[in-house]
Amino acid sequence: MAGKYALVVSLVCAFCAVGATPVLGDWYDDFSDGSYFRVPPGPWDPCDPNWTVGTPVGAFHAFADANDGALRMYIQPAILYGVIIAAVDEGFDEDPNTSPYWFDDSAPHYILSWVQWQDPNFGAAALAMHASWDDWRFYVLESEWPDGTPSQRLITAVAEAQDWREVPDGGSQVEEPNLDRWNGFWMLLQFISDGDPNNSYLCADAWNGNKYDWDGMWPLYHHILTGWPDANESPYLTDGWCGIISYCFQESTGPNTPAWLRSDIRFDNVEARWGYWGDQFPATTLTLKLKDANTVILEPNLPQYAKGQVVVCDAVCNGTKAFKKWTIKGPNDESDPLYQIIVDTNEVLYLTMAGDYLLKATCKCGGGGIEPFAAMVLLMLGLTVVIRRLT
Image 1 (tube, rainbow, N blue to C red):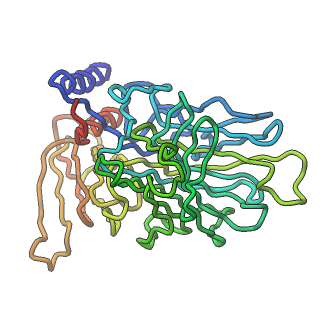
Image 2: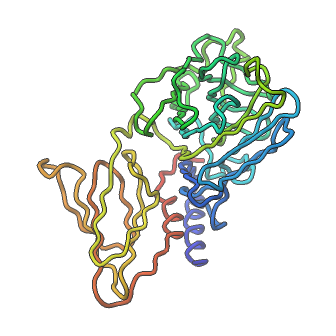
Image 3: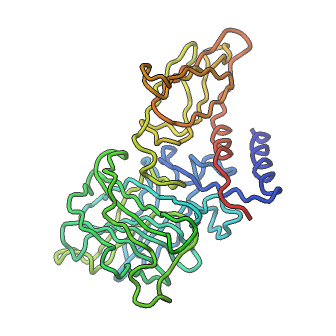
């Protein structure tokens, strides 16, 4: 396995040698391994990224763990407020030329997460992008209790020098009174840009139910440079990492709250990807059939997939049988003239979801069984991502 890791690293370095920087970016984590660290430790893995938890700010007590299959971040402030941030980065790596988790303003991208309050009466959650550990600046989407009232609001803001400044044009917040804090809901922050600050926007939404139940509307849609009284004050952030935040403020709680405030929030199915969230709809499905195979290892293994998402498939054969072929049917209905059946004999299949597929794994007698190598599959997935920035 060490040799396979070395192969992947050498291929990535080969990209660098010819003058292009592989800004891989895309990642996803459902914390199914019970950890927010990469398991096992090794090179970049888009389906099991490595999280860094920053030093809690203003904390009397704080912790982060993923023991129950979600990243739980708890903070109890010492005085008026407390903040704990977790980010997918490479150990506080601030160099966009070396960090595989870096996003910039060259193209649209987003961060999405399911969030759940352990106690719906306390705390707030936020998504961050274009963030930096050095100067504590980022674009942020928040969901909190405003003024202690039983409703939520989403705020698109910029934090600089620990001053979380709300965009001042009045179009940066919206009341969302029906979000289900107890059972969890989805938060989404979208960045739209072509590299020109004048063409850059922040969009945001939150909704209950399924990940793909989004209605296609942006209740928050903000031109980043618009609304600042002083043009020199308008902060345009070109790049950075993406992360999640759990925090609480004394002034954002009700009049009958206890002396010790807290924020206790779980984040799950967190993803940051290049592209526009709405372009991936409707969601697609992958149906599996097996012939003389025990199972098919999928990364990521999801009930539904966004259009354009790459799924890595590795078949595990029965006994001493050897892999024979994949049969791929779809992505359209059989009555559609474009319906197609494709046969692929590669042991590891990279399937780009363009619609609903039926995937059959066939094994045959003789030759010895295939040893599954899911870790290798995870690493190789990173090589399918497009190189997005040239030096």
